[in-house]
Image 1: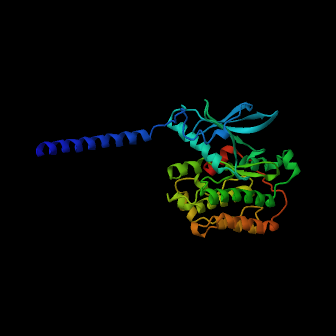
Image 2 (image 1 turned 30 degrees about the vertical axis):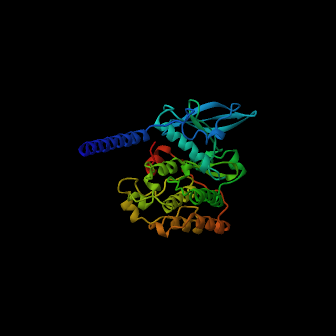
Image 3 (image 1 turned 180 degrees about the vertical axis):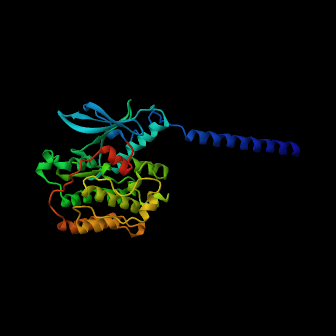
Length: 353
């Protein structure tokens, strides 16, 4: 009797171990798949219900701009209530039941939760329950800050430029707004932007600046690793060494942004080649004062680009310094007589096509 019971107990234990093993294995495999709720919707649909594109809104005059991680980025017109406004549309090219679709949904949730500040670009609507999936963002005119700076060269002024000259004082105003948006990301959401540069900012009428290009911040939150693809000349030394990116790494990039602003979009560190030896040459490089740059602005630029990240200021300190010294800024329009050759810029700046 006892041997029979022992044998039965052993068989039960072995069966339980085998069942547990296969249950755990199926759980691990299932975690990589996309799960749907009882209504057949991806996680996050309910949270995005108030952001879904209303039936009375129409996207018109859609034009391709570039390809991104998830699909094409386009510009177009959002028509609603008899009015039309310019927008940017991020399309999703994959299958709606793929893992990438779930990540795209998380990106929409990220924008809906994070971008609630006047100096951050905002998502207006999304379409996630129908194909094709897409996100709709507000845009600004003139638009991309780097392109705007280039447009100021050689006196190529449009209507907006005739109304208000872009001076060193304007640099202070633009920089303060960028710092305010970045400080909000950090203080309210513990987010490091990761790609601070003129190309990642939008500028509108009245010098209203909005921080854009938040996908690197989203990806770093998802993977807890830094996003590749940021040009060397905008990366802090510790980042070039492969160390973790911090808010003070972004401050270095902000110092480079100040250089871009005061030079009307010139490539930073113009004497250095953006090559594998950039870090070594940068270590022996003395930052040069750009033309038209006042002493206070140059001091802030150097402060942001201190070699040791612990010596760089926080965004809150940067904002106070910009407010304190704006009365010292020159009000003469900035000038750069040299035409910006885009191909040459890409080579000197180390920015891919």
